[in-house]
Amino acid sequence: MMNALERRSTFALSSIFALRMLGLFMIIPVFAVAGQSYQYATPALIGLAVGVYGLSQALLQIPFSLWADRFSRKPLIVFGLLLFALGGAVAAMSETIYGVIIGRAIAGAGAVSAVVMALLADVTREEQRTKAMAIMGMSIGLSFVIAFSLGPWLTSLVGISGLFWVTTIMGLLAILMLFMVPKTTRHHQNYKQGYLKQLKQVLKMADLNRLHVSVFSLHLLLTAMFVYIPSQLIEYADIPLAKHGIVYLPLLLISLFFAFPSIILAEKYRQMRGIFLTAIGGIIIGLIILIFGYQSKYLLLLGLGLFFIAFNVMEALLPSWLSKAAPIQSKATAMGVNASGQFLGAFCGGILGGQLLVLQHTAIGWSILSVIAIVWLLVSFGLAQPRYLSSIVLRLPEAKQTDEWTSQLLAIRGIEEVVVMSEQQVAYVKVDKQQIDDAARQHLTHLLGKEVAI
Image 1 (cartoon, rainbow, N blue to C red):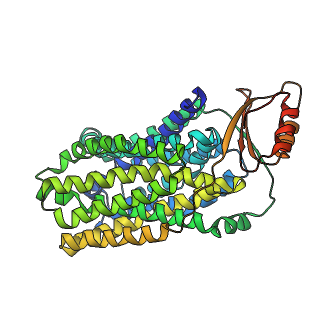
Image 2: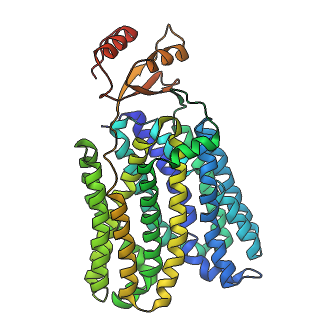
Image 3: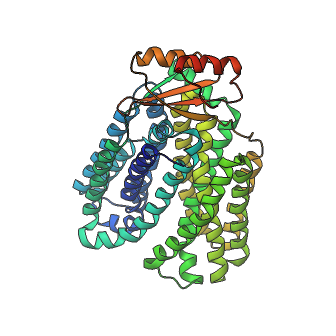
Protein backbone atom coordinates (compact mmCIF):
# COMPACT_ATOMS: atom_id res chain seq x y z
CA MET A 1 0.00 0.00 0.00
CA MET A 2 1.25 3.50 -0.81
CA ASN A 3 2.51 5.60 2.08
CA ALA A 4 1.46 9.25 2.56
CA LEU A 5 4.52 10.60 0.79
CA GLU A 6 3.90 8.40 -2.25
CA ARG A 7 0.20 9.28 -2.40
CA ARG A 8 0.93 13.01 -2.24
CA SER A 9 3.70 12.84 -4.84
CA THR A 10 1.66 10.65 -7.20
CA PHE A 11 -1.29 13.05 -6.95
CA ALA A 12 0.91 16.09 -7.59
CA LEU A 13 2.85 14.64 -10.54
CA SER A 14 -0.28 13.12 -12.10
CA SER A 15 -1.93 16.53 -11.78
CA ILE A 16 1.01 18.13 -13.60
CA PHE A 17 0.55 15.66 -16.44
CA ALA A 18 -3.22 16.12 -16.47
CA LEU A 19 -3.11 19.95 -16.42
CA ARG A 20 -0.67 20.03 -19.34
CA MET A 21 -2.68 17.50 -21.31
CA LEU A 22 -5.97 19.24 -20.52
CA GLY A 23 -4.60 22.49 -21.91
CA LEU A 24 -3.24 20.67 -24.97
CA PHE A 25 -6.25 18.47 -25.75
CA MET A 26 -8.87 21.24 -25.49
CA ILE A 27 -7.43 22.82 -28.65
CA ILE A 28 -7.73 19.69 -30.82
CA PRO A 29 -11.52 19.36 -31.33
CA VAL A 30 -12.04 23.08 -32.12
CA PHE A 31 -8.96 24.34 -33.95
CA ALA A 32 -9.78 22.89 -37.36
CA VAL A 33 -12.78 25.25 -37.47
CA ALA A 34 -11.69 28.11 -35.17
CA GLY A 35 -8.23 28.29 -36.76
CA GLN A 36 -9.75 29.55 -40.01
CA SER A 37 -10.27 32.96 -38.39
CA TYR A 38 -6.51 33.68 -38.31
CA GLN A 39 -4.79 35.73 -41.01
CA TYR A 40 -3.02 33.65 -43.69
CA ALA A 41 -4.69 30.45 -42.44
CA THR A 42 -4.78 27.50 -44.85
CA PRO A 43 -5.75 23.89 -44.12
CA ALA A 44 -2.08 22.87 -44.27
CA LEU A 45 -0.99 25.61 -41.83
CA ILE A 46 -3.88 24.82 -39.47
CA GLY A 47 -2.73 21.18 -39.47
CA LEU A 48 0.84 22.32 -38.81
CA ALA A 49 -0.32 24.45 -35.89
CA VAL A 50 -1.92 21.38 -34.31
CA GLY A 51 0.93 18.97 -35.10
CA VAL A 52 3.99 21.14 -34.42
CA TYR A 53 3.52 20.72 -30.65
CA GLY A 54 4.06 16.97 -30.93
CA LEU A 55 7.04 17.47 -33.23
CA SER A 56 8.74 19.81 -30.72
CA GLN A 57 8.03 17.32 -27.96
CA ALA A 58 9.50 14.43 -29.92
CA LEU A 59 12.68 16.36 -30.76
CA LEU A 60 13.36 17.71 -27.25
CA GLN A 61 12.36 14.84 -24.95
CA ILE A 62 15.83 13.27 -25.28
CA PRO A 63 17.88 16.42 -24.49
CA PHE A 64 15.71 17.15 -21.43
CA SER A 65 16.00 13.56 -20.23
CA LEU A 66 19.80 13.49 -20.68
CA TRP A 67 20.04 16.60 -18.49
CA ALA A 68 17.65 15.04 -15.97
CA ASP A 69 20.07 12.16 -15.36
CA ARG A 70 22.79 14.64 -14.40
CA PHE A 71 20.95 17.50 -12.70
CA SER A 72 18.03 17.95 -10.31
CA ARG A 73 14.76 17.00 -11.97
CA LYS A 74 12.44 19.60 -10.37
CA PRO A 75 14.10 22.75 -11.82
CA LEU A 76 13.97 21.16 -15.29
CA ILE A 77 10.24 20.48 -14.87
CA VAL A 78 9.67 24.12 -13.82
CA PHE A 79 11.60 25.34 -16.89
CA GLY A 80 9.58 23.07 -19.18
CA LEU A 81 6.26 24.21 -17.69
CA LEU A 82 7.29 27.87 -18.08
CA LEU A 83 7.97 27.19 -21.78
CA PHE A 84 4.55 25.53 -22.04
CA ALA A 85 2.87 28.56 -20.42
CA LEU A 86 4.87 31.02 -22.57
CA GLY A 87 3.90 29.17 -25.74
CA GLY A 88 0.23 29.40 -24.79
CA ALA A 89 0.57 33.15 -24.20
CA VAL A 90 2.32 33.69 -27.57
CA ALA A 91 -0.46 31.77 -29.35
CA ALA A 92 -3.15 33.67 -27.40
CA MET A 93 -1.76 37.07 -28.46
CA SER A 94 -1.26 36.10 -32.10
CA GLU A 95 -3.47 37.36 -34.90
CA THR A 96 -1.85 35.29 -37.65
CA ILE A 97 -1.59 31.54 -38.06
CA TYR A 98 2.21 31.88 -38.10
CA GLY A 99 2.15 33.33 -34.59
CA VAL A 100 0.04 30.41 -33.40
CA ILE A 101 2.50 27.95 -34.98
CA ILE A 102 5.42 29.66 -33.19
CA GLY A 103 3.50 29.61 -29.88
CA ARG A 104 2.64 25.94 -30.24
CA ALA A 105 6.28 25.11 -31.07
CA ILE A 106 7.46 26.96 -27.93
CA ALA A 107 4.86 25.15 -25.81
CA GLY A 108 6.00 21.81 -27.19
CA ALA A 109 9.62 22.70 -26.40
CA GLY A 110 8.77 22.21 -22.71
CA ALA A 111 9.31 18.49 -23.24
CA VAL A 112 9.40 17.26 -19.64
CA SER A 113 7.08 14.24 -19.75
CA ALA A 114 10.00 11.83 -19.25
CA VAL A 115 11.44 13.98 -16.45
CA VAL A 116 8.10 13.93 -14.60
CA MET A 117 7.92 10.13 -14.91
CA ALA A 118 11.52 9.76 -13.76
CA LEU A 119 10.78 11.93 -10.70
CA LEU A 120 7.74 9.77 -9.92
CA ALA A 121 9.99 6.69 -10.14
CA ASP A 122 12.38 8.37 -7.65
CA VAL A 123 9.75 9.09 -5.00
CA THR A 124 7.89 5.76 -5.13
CA ARG A 125 9.03 2.38 -3.89
CA GLU A 126 9.54 -0.33 -6.50
CA GLU A 127 6.57 -2.32 -5.15
CA GLN A 128 4.24 0.70 -5.62
CA ARG A 129 5.68 1.89 -8.94
CA THR A 130 3.14 0.26 -11.26
CA LYS A 131 0.25 1.57 -9.18
CA ALA A 132 1.67 5.11 -9.27
CA MET A 133 2.27 4.93 -13.02
CA ALA A 134 -1.26 3.57 -13.49
CA ILE A 135 -2.72 6.58 -11.70
CA MET A 136 -0.65 8.88 -13.92
CA GLY A 137 -1.84 7.02 -17.03
CA MET A 138 -5.47 7.25 -15.93
CA SER A 139 -5.11 10.99 -15.27
CA ILE A 140 -3.99 11.44 -18.89
CA GLY A 141 -6.97 9.44 -20.18
CA LEU A 142 -9.40 11.37 -17.99
CA SER A 143 -7.95 14.73 -19.07
CA PHE A 144 -8.41 13.62 -22.70
CA VAL A 145 -12.12 12.95 -22.21
CA ILE A 146 -12.73 16.10 -20.13
CA ALA A 147 -10.83 18.25 -22.65
CA PHE A 148 -12.84 16.97 -25.61
CA SER A 149 -16.02 17.82 -23.70
CA LEU A 150 -14.87 21.22 -22.37
CA GLY A 151 -13.03 22.53 -25.45
CA PRO A 152 -16.05 23.41 -27.62
CA TRP A 153 -17.96 24.88 -24.65
CA LEU A 154 -15.06 27.06 -23.47
CA THR A 155 -14.37 28.25 -27.01
CA SER A 156 -17.97 29.46 -27.26
CA LEU A 157 -17.40 31.50 -24.07
CA VAL A 158 -13.88 32.92 -24.46
CA GLY A 159 -12.94 32.30 -28.10
CA ILE A 160 -9.88 30.51 -29.42
CA SER A 161 -7.43 33.09 -28.01
CA GLY A 162 -9.09 32.71 -24.60
CA LEU A 163 -8.59 28.95 -24.88
CA PHE A 164 -4.85 29.49 -25.40
CA TRP A 165 -4.82 31.68 -22.27
CA VAL A 166 -6.41 28.76 -20.42
CA THR A 167 -3.46 26.56 -21.46
CA THR A 168 -1.09 29.18 -20.00
CA ILE A 169 -3.00 29.13 -16.71
CA MET A 170 -2.87 25.31 -16.70
CA GLY A 171 0.92 25.39 -17.08
CA LEU A 172 1.35 27.84 -14.20
CA LEU A 173 -0.98 25.83 -11.94
CA ALA A 174 1.10 22.74 -12.72
CA ILE A 175 4.21 24.50 -11.36
CA LEU A 176 2.41 25.03 -8.03
CA MET A 177 1.75 21.29 -7.78
CA LEU A 178 5.52 20.67 -7.62
CA PHE A 179 5.59 22.09 -4.09
CA MET A 180 3.83 18.90 -2.97
CA VAL A 181 6.70 16.72 -4.23
CA PRO A 182 9.67 16.23 -1.86
CA LYS A 183 13.13 17.41 -2.80
CA THR A 184 15.22 14.38 -3.76
CA THR A 185 18.92 13.61 -4.10
CA ARG A 186 19.80 10.50 -6.10
CA HIS A 187 22.83 8.36 -5.27
CA HIS A 188 23.95 5.39 -7.36
CA GLN A 189 27.11 3.79 -8.69
CA ASN A 190 28.63 6.51 -10.88
CA TYR A 191 29.38 5.60 -14.48
CA LYS A 192 31.12 8.62 -15.96
CA GLN A 193 30.26 8.91 -19.64
CA GLY A 194 29.40 11.58 -22.17
CA TYR A 195 25.88 12.40 -23.34
CA LEU A 196 26.30 10.59 -26.66
CA LYS A 197 27.74 7.47 -25.04
CA GLN A 198 24.88 7.44 -22.52
CA LEU A 199 22.31 7.70 -25.31
CA LYS A 200 24.03 4.94 -27.31
CA GLN A 201 24.00 2.67 -24.25
CA VAL A 202 20.22 3.07 -23.95
CA LEU A 203 19.63 2.58 -27.70
CA LYS A 204 21.63 -0.67 -27.73
CA MET A 205 19.34 -2.41 -25.20
CA ALA A 206 16.99 -4.73 -27.12
CA ASP A 207 14.21 -4.84 -24.51
CA LEU A 208 14.17 -1.06 -24.18
CA ASN A 209 13.84 -0.78 -27.97
CA ARG A 210 10.89 -3.18 -27.88
CA LEU A 211 9.26 -0.90 -25.28
CA HIS A 212 9.93 2.12 -27.52
CA VAL A 213 8.25 0.30 -30.42
CA SER A 214 5.36 -0.49 -28.07
CA VAL A 215 4.73 3.11 -27.01
CA PHE A 216 5.05 4.27 -30.65
CA SER A 217 2.50 1.65 -31.77
CA LEU A 218 0.12 2.32 -28.88
CA HIS A 219 -0.11 6.07 -29.51
CA LEU A 220 -0.16 5.67 -33.28
CA LEU A 221 -3.21 3.42 -32.93
CA LEU A 222 -4.87 5.70 -30.35
CA THR A 223 -4.45 8.86 -32.43
CA ALA A 224 -5.48 7.17 -35.67
CA MET A 225 -8.55 5.78 -33.94
CA PHE A 226 -9.65 9.20 -32.65
CA VAL A 227 -9.29 10.66 -36.12
CA TYR A 228 -11.08 7.70 -37.71
CA ILE A 229 -13.91 6.81 -35.34
CA PRO A 230 -15.89 10.07 -34.78
CA SER A 231 -17.49 9.93 -38.23
CA GLN A 232 -18.48 6.29 -37.60
CA LEU A 233 -20.06 7.12 -34.24
CA ILE A 234 -22.12 9.76 -36.04
CA GLU A 235 -23.08 7.56 -39.02
CA TYR A 236 -23.56 4.12 -37.46
CA ALA A 237 -24.34 4.88 -33.80
CA ASP A 238 -26.35 8.07 -34.35
CA ILE A 239 -24.28 9.92 -31.73
CA PRO A 240 -23.65 13.60 -32.61
CA LEU A 241 -20.12 15.02 -32.29
CA ALA A 242 -21.06 17.22 -29.30
CA LYS A 243 -21.97 14.08 -27.30
CA HIS A 244 -18.88 11.98 -28.05
CA GLY A 245 -17.36 12.93 -24.70
CA ILE A 246 -20.37 11.29 -23.05
CA VAL A 247 -19.46 8.07 -24.90
CA TYR A 248 -15.74 8.18 -24.05
CA LEU A 249 -16.17 8.89 -20.32
CA PRO A 250 -18.21 5.73 -19.42
CA LEU A 251 -15.87 3.60 -21.57
CA LEU A 252 -12.90 5.09 -19.73
CA LEU A 253 -14.47 4.37 -16.32
CA ILE A 254 -15.29 0.79 -17.34
CA SER A 255 -11.72 0.34 -18.55
CA LEU A 256 -10.41 1.47 -15.14
CA PHE A 257 -12.52 -1.23 -13.48
CA PHE A 258 -10.69 -3.87 -15.51
CA ALA A 259 -7.30 -2.19 -15.70
CA PHE A 260 -6.48 -1.91 -12.00
CA PRO A 261 -6.83 -5.66 -11.21
CA SER A 262 -4.63 -6.41 -14.23
CA ILE A 263 -1.97 -4.03 -12.94
CA ILE A 264 -2.06 -5.58 -9.45
CA LEU A 265 -1.68 -9.07 -10.97
CA ALA A 266 1.25 -7.87 -13.08
CA GLU A 267 3.16 -6.51 -10.08
CA LYS A 268 2.12 -8.74 -7.17
CA TYR A 269 2.49 -12.05 -9.00
CA ARG A 270 5.30 -10.88 -11.31
CA GLN A 271 3.26 -11.52 -14.43
CA MET A 272 4.09 -8.26 -16.20
CA ARG A 273 5.10 -9.90 -19.48
CA GLY A 274 1.95 -12.04 -19.61
CA ILE A 275 -0.38 -9.12 -18.84
CA PHE A 276 1.52 -6.95 -21.33
CA LEU A 277 1.09 -9.43 -24.19
CA THR A 278 -2.55 -10.04 -23.20
CA ALA A 279 -3.23 -6.28 -23.40
CA ILE A 280 -1.82 -6.14 -26.94
CA GLY A 281 -4.04 -9.14 -27.73
CA GLY A 282 -7.01 -7.18 -26.34
CA ILE A 283 -6.24 -4.29 -28.68
CA ILE A 284 -6.09 -6.69 -31.63
CA ILE A 285 -9.44 -8.30 -30.70
CA GLY A 286 -11.04 -4.87 -30.32
CA LEU A 287 -9.81 -3.83 -33.77
CA ILE A 288 -10.97 -7.13 -35.35
CA ILE A 289 -14.45 -6.57 -33.87
CA LEU A 290 -14.44 -3.15 -35.54
CA ILE A 291 -13.47 -4.67 -38.91
CA PHE A 292 -16.60 -6.82 -38.99
CA GLY A 293 -18.98 -4.94 -36.69
CA TYR A 294 -18.49 -1.22 -37.28
CA GLN A 295 -21.98 -0.91 -38.80
CA SER A 296 -23.56 -2.11 -35.54
CA LYS A 297 -23.84 0.48 -32.77
CA TYR A 298 -23.22 -2.09 -30.03
CA LEU A 299 -20.31 -3.86 -31.73
CA LEU A 300 -18.77 -0.48 -32.48
CA LEU A 301 -18.93 0.44 -28.78
CA LEU A 302 -17.73 -3.05 -27.76
CA GLY A 303 -14.65 -2.80 -29.98
CA LEU A 304 -13.94 0.70 -28.70
CA GLY A 305 -14.42 -0.46 -25.10
CA LEU A 306 -11.96 -3.36 -25.48
CA PHE A 307 -9.44 -0.97 -27.00
CA PHE A 308 -9.84 1.43 -24.03
CA ILE A 309 -9.38 -1.36 -21.47
CA ALA A 310 -6.22 -2.64 -23.14
CA PHE A 311 -4.93 0.89 -23.75
CA ASN A 312 -5.19 1.84 -20.07
CA VAL A 313 -3.44 -1.37 -18.99
CA MET A 314 -0.62 -0.62 -21.44
CA GLU A 315 -0.47 3.04 -20.41
CA ALA A 316 0.21 1.95 -16.84
CA LEU A 317 2.56 -0.97 -17.57
CA LEU A 318 4.85 0.70 -20.11
CA PRO A 319 6.44 3.40 -17.88
CA SER A 320 6.66 0.99 -14.95
CA TRP A 321 8.40 -1.67 -17.07
CA LEU A 322 10.67 0.98 -18.57
CA SER A 323 11.76 2.17 -15.12
CA LYS A 324 12.62 -1.46 -14.20
CA ALA A 325 14.49 -2.21 -17.44
CA ALA A 326 16.43 1.04 -17.77
CA PRO A 327 19.92 1.38 -16.29
CA ILE A 328 19.70 3.19 -12.94
CA GLN A 329 22.06 5.97 -14.05
CA SER A 330 20.19 6.47 -17.38
CA LYS A 331 16.57 6.12 -16.25
CA ALA A 332 15.43 9.55 -17.47
CA THR A 333 17.32 9.11 -20.76
CA ALA A 334 15.47 5.85 -21.47
CA MET A 335 12.18 7.52 -20.59
CA GLY A 336 13.07 10.42 -22.89
CA VAL A 337 13.62 8.10 -25.87
CA ASN A 338 10.35 6.42 -24.98
CA ALA A 339 8.48 9.74 -24.77
CA SER A 340 9.91 10.72 -28.18
CA GLY A 341 8.50 7.46 -29.52
CA GLN A 342 5.14 8.31 -27.96
CA PHE A 343 4.89 11.73 -29.61
CA LEU A 344 6.19 10.45 -32.94
CA GLY A 345 3.55 7.73 -32.75
CA ALA A 346 0.85 10.33 -32.16
CA PHE A 347 2.19 12.43 -35.05
CA CYS A 348 2.21 9.43 -37.44
CA GLY A 349 -1.17 8.27 -36.13
CA GLY A 350 -2.74 11.61 -37.02
CA ILE A 351 -1.36 11.39 -40.56
CA LEU A 352 -2.46 7.75 -40.92
CA GLY A 353 -5.94 8.49 -39.54
CA GLY A 354 -6.42 11.21 -42.16
CA GLN A 355 -5.36 8.82 -44.91
CA LEU A 356 -7.80 6.17 -43.65
CA LEU A 357 -10.63 8.68 -43.96
CA VAL A 358 -9.67 9.26 -47.59
CA LEU A 359 -9.93 5.49 -48.24
CA GLN A 360 -13.71 5.57 -47.82
CA HIS A 361 -13.64 1.83 -47.05
CA THR A 362 -14.08 1.42 -43.31
CA ALA A 363 -13.29 -2.29 -43.02
CA ILE A 364 -9.96 -1.89 -44.84
CA GLY A 365 -9.08 1.00 -42.52
CA TRP A 366 -9.62 -1.10 -39.40
CA SER A 367 -7.74 -3.98 -41.07
CA ILE A 368 -4.67 -1.76 -41.57
CA LEU A 369 -4.72 -0.80 -37.88
CA SER A 370 -5.13 -4.48 -36.93
CA VAL A 371 -2.06 -5.46 -38.98
CA ILE A 372 0.00 -2.78 -37.19
CA ALA A 373 -1.14 -4.19 -33.82
CA ILE A 374 -0.28 -7.78 -34.89
CA VAL A 375 3.25 -6.72 -35.96
CA TRP A 376 3.59 -4.97 -32.59
CA LEU A 377 2.61 -8.21 -30.80
CA LEU A 378 5.18 -10.22 -32.76
CA VAL A 379 7.93 -7.73 -31.87
CA SER A 380 6.90 -7.83 -28.20
CA PHE A 381 7.22 -11.62 -27.91
CA GLY A 382 10.97 -11.09 -27.56
CA LEU A 383 10.54 -9.20 -24.28
CA ALA A 384 12.06 -10.86 -21.22
CA GLN A 385 10.40 -10.62 -17.80
CA PRO A 386 11.71 -7.41 -16.15
CA ARG A 387 13.98 -7.43 -13.12
CA TYR A 388 12.05 -6.84 -9.90
CA LEU A 389 13.75 -4.67 -7.29
CA SER A 390 12.48 -4.13 -3.75
CA SER A 391 12.57 -0.98 -1.67
CA ILE A 392 13.27 -0.44 2.01
CA VAL A 393 12.56 2.85 3.76
CA LEU A 394 15.25 4.05 6.17
CA ARG A 395 15.54 7.03 8.48
CA LEU A 396 18.53 9.23 7.71
CA PRO A 397 21.32 8.87 10.32
CA GLU A 398 21.80 11.83 12.64
CA ALA A 399 25.48 11.30 13.39
CA LYS A 400 26.86 10.60 9.90
CA GLN A 401 27.15 12.74 6.82
CA THR A 402 24.49 11.68 4.31
CA ASP A 403 26.94 11.39 1.38
CA GLU A 404 29.28 9.17 3.40
CA TRP A 405 26.34 7.03 4.56
CA THR A 406 24.96 6.56 1.03
CA SER A 407 28.43 5.67 -0.28
CA GLN A 408 28.70 2.95 2.37
CA LEU A 409 25.25 1.65 1.41
CA LEU A 410 26.09 1.55 -2.30
CA ALA A 411 29.24 -0.44 -1.54
CA ILE A 412 27.03 -3.31 -0.35
CA ARG A 413 26.36 -5.96 -2.99
CA GLY A 414 22.73 -5.85 -4.19
CA ILE A 415 21.97 -2.21 -3.32
CA GLU A 416 21.30 -0.41 -6.60
CA GLU A 417 20.23 3.11 -5.69
CA VAL A 418 19.56 5.37 -2.72
CA VAL A 419 17.09 8.26 -3.10
CA VAL A 420 17.39 10.72 -0.22
CA MET A 421 14.54 13.04 0.81
CA SER A 422 16.33 15.27 3.29
CA GLU A 423 13.32 17.37 4.35
CA GLN A 424 11.44 14.20 5.34
CA GLN A 425 14.60 12.64 6.84
CA VAL A 426 14.03 9.38 4.95
CA ALA A 427 15.71 7.43 2.15
CA TYR A 428 14.37 4.83 -0.28
CA VAL A 429 16.97 2.10 -0.76
CA LYS A 430 16.37 0.03 -3.91
CA VAL A 431 17.60 -3.54 -3.56
CA ASP A 432 18.01 -6.51 -5.88
CA LYS A 433 17.11 -9.39 -3.53
CA GLN A 434 18.72 -11.95 -5.83
CA GLN A 435 22.09 -10.23 -5.36
CA ILE A 436 21.87 -9.91 -1.57
CA ASP A 437 23.84 -12.66 0.22
CA ASP A 438 24.59 -13.31 3.91
CA ALA A 439 27.72 -11.14 3.84
CA ALA A 440 25.73 -8.24 2.40
CA ARG A 441 23.02 -8.66 5.06
CA GLN A 442 25.64 -8.63 7.84
CA HIS A 443 27.30 -5.55 6.36
CA LEU A 444 23.92 -3.79 6.15
CA THR A 445 23.01 -4.77 9.73
CA HIS A 446 26.37 -3.42 10.97
CA LEU A 447 25.92 -0.16 9.08
CA LEU A 448 22.35 0.44 10.29
CA GLY A 449 22.82 -0.90 13.81
CA LYS A 450 19.76 -3.13 13.40
CA GLU A 451 18.65 -6.08 11.32
CA VAL A 452 16.62 -5.28 8.22
CA ALA A 453 14.30 -7.89 6.69
CA ILE A 454 15.26 -8.41 3.03
